[in-house]
Image 1 (cartoon, rainbow, N blue to C red):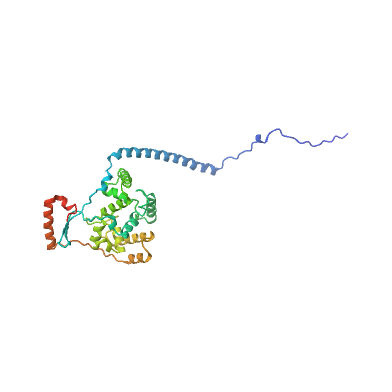
Image 2 (spheres, rainbow, N blue to C red; image 1 turned 180 degrees about the vertical axis):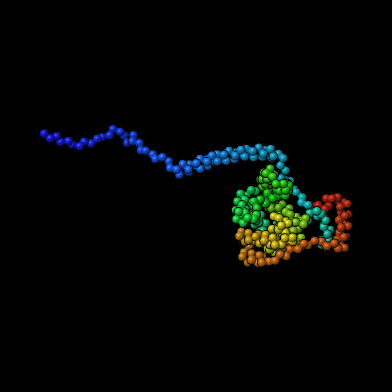
Length: 321
């Protein structure tokens, strides 16, 4: 008798979920890469805590400093120093006496090309930002990393007004924070044209000369309307470093600065190709146009002395004629 054995199907009673697939251990590279990731998270956490503490400290500083900030409202009525001028009967200038050479003028009397030259070199986004230009700061940093020279600055025109009227030349973190606060206040108090007018009448050009009108007279013996594009760009390059970029004491450096400004004006569309090439090829024609002590000057000094006796020391700072 033979017995036939038929194959039978063995059915497992375990569900598929109960079958566990073995996971291979982490590789060496996975363990290595996990360390920087954990370190990065830790560093980000520390940075966040520092940021929060810094913000808290800045808030405390602002709260304590605000009451002591200068009142920027006084910029509405500021009186810029102007020298005493002695004129002839026909209105010709005989002599002037004072510590600061300056002739303040309203913004509408300053040619557009002059304004554009200063915007191109100092703050081309002046009419777009609210006093602090983060894009400009980033551009200045990239330019410095690329060239190794500080051809562009991160300070805006409004920040320079805050420094020129209210702050000393001290370079500290506290003074910089005060400068930022004053800048924001100025932007809220004055219009953009008012800020620009103060700036162009207050900036220093060397040789006791302040303001663009007095600078044009000192270096070129010309009114603003008679300046060439090359002369305008030369003047615009002086305030950043009145000694290093001076066309009289450092003509080579001054020409380099002038040509850089011409390039910026060309990039921004303020100059066409012909204007740019002609101005760049122009020589340095700046000279020191000072008063000669002639007999007329001596008479002017006598007249100035009489005015001082009558009005006091204010006579040589209030622009009397």
